[in-house]
Image 1: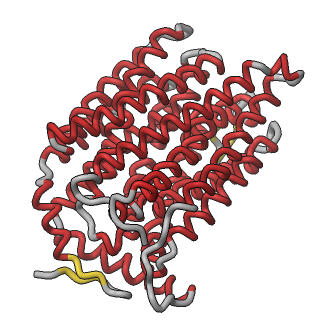
Image 2 (image 1 turned 90 degrees about the horizontal axis):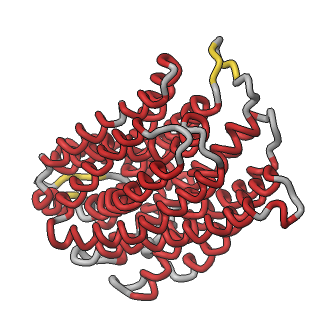
Length: 443
């Protein structure tokens, strides 16, 4: 295992953000939602349980269902990773599966709704599962005085990598005529290129990461049994750590709003605002490169104001974004691009600092397990925003009203975060006693 704050290890760690951001930006964020809504779903929509769903509403349901699957699986997976000392191997497995499935995504043709959703769910689950392993390395390779800066650096590098890959995707789509292909084929090639980017740069990152040694290594059955046992034990004992629990609930709320906006922006822009694919792609590109500076800016703000205060500032910014998004005029690219600049500034701040604040509150020897919980609450929160969006949009016929409802998540989450005693939460992590198969709390 590399020593803490080792430059080579940290470079490898942040490069995985560079690798996987191609998927979350180009594929999950922009290209595939548009491709799914315009090419895969029939114009008349899809009937499910007697109700017809259009592209945006069906996509929201898919995102919510994927979050539910992850809610069930992630904490056990993290516990197994800690027990086995195999975070690097599991990171390689999920990154490989996710990147391969991403390359396969554009092979799904019009009308194959179930196949498209199933393949996308594989990529989505693999992406998040790999991130549990990736995040689990953070407390092991940093110290309390560097964790905020390294986390922010990871997001900044990720935004840059995702942005550059998005440039490639835009070049493929915009240059379709020169390449002698139609627009749909160009979109398919752009999606596949993101999968190749994810897989290729993951190999570089994996070459610089090392697992914490665990001897003797248990069998797969023993790891699974220990994973379930430790997950249940940790869940029961979280109430003994009220500030950690309060932060998790606050994160659950404000992250719900963030994840919903990120997941549904492209279909909202194309279907509700009537903006073209090049405009949406260009705006996401602006968001990515502004977010590089935003992540670094909020990393600096955390050093001066404190991590919690900096997150609260970012949450306030997200509230303003939700209000402005609901009021955007249709058919006008300039306001949409301007709002994208605002999103880029606050996006890196809330994501990077929430990760590092949580990482400073948890026991290092069970970091993957606790980041499994972090992924669970992240994805548990991401269930409700898309479902509420779909419900409000379907029942009222107004996706603008659905966007406005997201303000409640930011306001409630910010209020609870303000009540968290960060110093007490960081001190309490010394009370955890992590055994091979059980978790205890020191008095």
